[in-house]
Length: 289
Ligand code: G3H
Ligand code: 13P
Ligand code: ZN
Image (cartoon, rainbow, N blue to C red; front, side, top):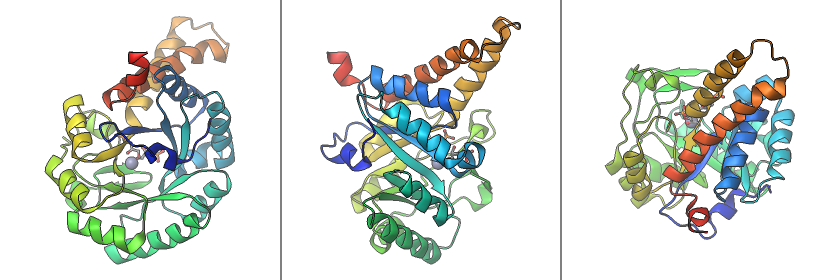
């Protein structure tokens, strides 16, 4: 079933973090939801402006909502890295319970002003808003952020931003990097655990770790212990998808049934999603059963 993001935090066990997995298509969505079912752990399924441009927001939202009907553990529909408030308003109309406004490329006051406006619009409809303070390296939607511009989140700024905006969840820049670049050795991410702790001491709402593909399990564990409650994964699912697709297409070059070609692709996504859910502390209920 589709659930509101607030349900994740009604009885939150802070030793776990919920995964926010990006999807672009049917097979990725199926893989994520099968993983969630198998481990009896709710997941956040995220779609971006790029995916809305590719598939149509109505289409991708309908795919996630319909696939969520088969979910036992619960699926939260989230809009990731929204730059344009009109897209986020449309997402709210379509049933998203969580939207991220990412105006982190703007100066503090402008980011806070736009985020506050989004919070007012979303809260009037009972929807949660994620804001971002600080800037991350890598590629965020169409905006490239060079290393020189990178700006880690100052705990005091996070506190001021939270009070100025009323956001429900907060993305912070703590050293991770978006996209494939770090998986290919282009940049070396680190995770600044003391910074996470310092932000968590000041801001008592769920903190979100973006760019978490490729972060090792020990560091993930420390980040969760430091106060991270949501962890965003896109790149590792994309890698699983693309590698499995290439392999599957090669098995029998005469195969023309898309279902036969795509089934191992959804399975590969599912396996990575399950590994992440376990790494983030989920799946214990199922393991103990
Ligand atoms: O952090 C951003 C996500 O990986 C979304 O990427 O805009 O290419 O869909 P995208
Ligand atoms: P990765 O590119 O590391 O998977 O990060 C995804 C993300 O932050 C989506 O918002
Ligand atoms: Zn992100």
